Length: 619
Image 1 (cartoon, rainbow, N blue to C red):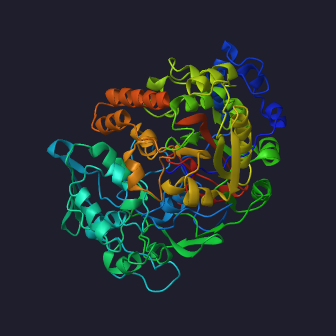
Image 2: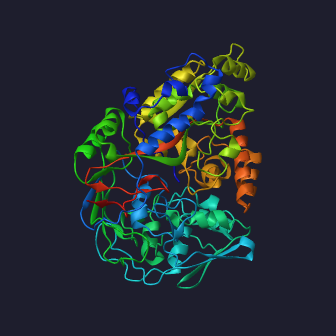
Image 3: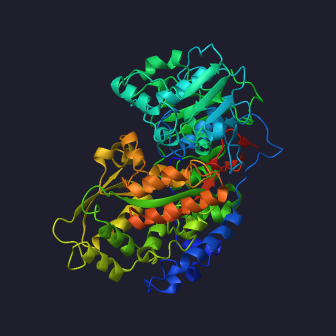
């Protein structure tokens, strides 16, 4: 899932005593006397245990209780906006809160399912034939579209299989900047020809010959290689939510960006009634939705996302002391987190996020095009200090590689300890002696950067992301770099800089990744596969711009492995290969901290660890 990472809160030292975490015994950044001793390197494992015990105190609800009632309005407080309201481009964790309520991809995620998606628009699980190269879906009959965003008459025709085909085809258009289609659908027959066609005519969705619709209820995916596992899982992402060409094509022809999102049709229990970018998103009941047609109970009558809550601590307090509210793109922070833990423990939940946070080093530009310089930066990094900026060990485990706990491949990549043969990731509080030795290998005889040492860094302009950036700036400065830090609004950081290949700075300190589905491929393929860079030049998630032929080849081969044990082992091996290239500083395996008003019964969806609007209810 798109990492466009949901903001995490700053964890106050005073809260440590409140929630009884023995961090002093876990190697916290308050004990940094040793830069390389066993007490430091053991911190990751111990901290994972401590965090797990805290999660048990604030467990999420993943099924709606029998007492849940229909009715009422929910207000969702937000710092910023979604990335793209258009399901063809949406790839941001909080956006999926909206998508899970209004969209109906072929497959979907009930809140308590983590291993595999379940049929949603599809009538049943697909039929896989031809050794994994042909996948056939039947879609449900009599599914109807909502009114369009902004009001007006809806699309009168029911959903047909051709609408799903068009939805995927339009995601290849530059005006629908999708971040994952060309990766998960790479083996789709005719993809290269479709990409060539859309390059020639960018305002028209190309024909994907590998998707056929024999009749109005059948859609078939034809692959050149047996990569059905990843493709079926990827069809749970919003891109396969139906979009009728007869309605949407005129909006998709707009340049440089499709305006379909301002007029979109939905088929879920809710629809986007109003979307005012940066201000408000209103979801209303879809009058054309048939209750019981899928697994979403849809208790709430209306959901309003109110944006612009820049003071996240105040927003959390407002939720805790108010009525009918939850959080959106921020977590409990600072004093507000302390308040929640002490006085409102039943209104706070901690959920493993299935994701990571890391600091991306742009490997295509000096000085980080030199692998020894990158290794030096990782060796020097005090990752516990970075973790403290977002909540200490309560917000997640100390990361030593990229596949997080709970995802196949985590243990095979070294588990909590990480790869044992890479000395530069062994020291949670940093090792300047080791870092300087790598700087010397990079050509800096003094062990510090000399000459042209200016590096640019674009970060969040509000805590906690801005705090992370300041801490990392100091760590780079200690190695002799002159850091030009440019704080900007969170979405702008991605849409103008870090995710735009041509504009990417040397360092993006506030990035990370959340699983697209529960598989090693869904954690490391998009953000570290060189093939994704050219495929998404304006919505690129390979932030280091890593394009290593051996890694690309290994990723290409791994997606065809069907044996679960072998598949996990291979992705663990690839994780090691990525860490050996030192493209980023991993430092956090995320946990989500959500809050709710006392009259809200929040159900957390394990797919993205956020409240599921289609299952949440009011008391």
